[in-house]
Length: 154
Length: 154
DNA sequence: ATATATAAGACCAAAAATATCTTATTTATC
DNA sequence: GATAAATAAGATATTTTTGGTCTTATATAT
Image (spheres, rainbow over the protein chains, first blue to last red):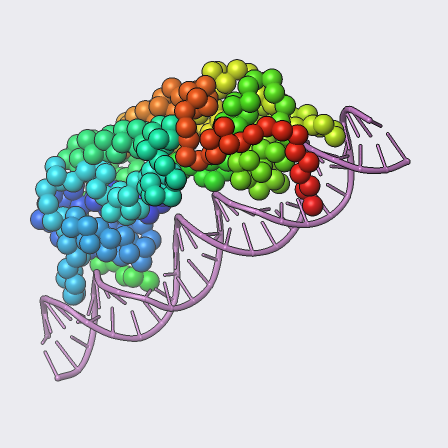
């Protein structure tokens, strides 16, 4: 497991939406601009977030994205796993059947424990906490503005 | 961070050596054959292990590898970090300067904590424990034999 | 000197990650 | 209904990482 760029973008996107509150609709282009995500890449990531039931995508000329659930119910774990799939530190953990007898394997147990701890840490963190605090990966909310942007897609 | 194939091979190599005891010299080809590692790839990995002070490489016609320290002092963490470099779950953790102000960043702290937990788990596990137990990633020691092999590199 | 081992680094191939492009669809508005 | 402005979906391209191989050099025992 590794936090890929896509995973990082997913976090930024949800964090931006969380700072706007649960129901607020934000256009893809605004999110992309504010959080410095390539717009087309964001589209792909948003689809994964939507499939996971985290955001809702609205089409049409006034479309955009918005959170489906309250930021307090959205954890770092759910966002990350929506983007990069299940977290597993090695194959052995993800696919026990790839080993002959993983239940007896000492190495397997170590990775399995580490994997559980990692998931627990990520699950403990929700987006109310993150939205409230400052994050170096994003502009502070106060600077982000809101405004009706008219951003051209090229 | 992710356990790459190279990291997996590094563990297998050290585990095989650990099962032979600290001072025992084992040829590269024997290790490669026993643990199913491509011989040339093993050479590369061994060099990293040697640079980290975990094994010693002996050249010449009776050369091979052997553990420099007691298996009880060798941890999963040291082997893995010898191969894949420092463990970091995201860039933010590896290079704090890559963020504007990572010390204030809520997301940073979550990853940092998870990272510490992971390293702790890996550091707790040494190769005496691993060598004693069965591991699905390797043939059981009893089947591995010892013998003077004359294995052709082709 | 020779045979047999590893050293070291160049090199290549495959996979994954990142990013973009193109065509289609949806929706509000006129 | 036509148009403009947004996203959908998937194909494609680029870059990076990983995995593996090959070649030439060096070391050591006999």
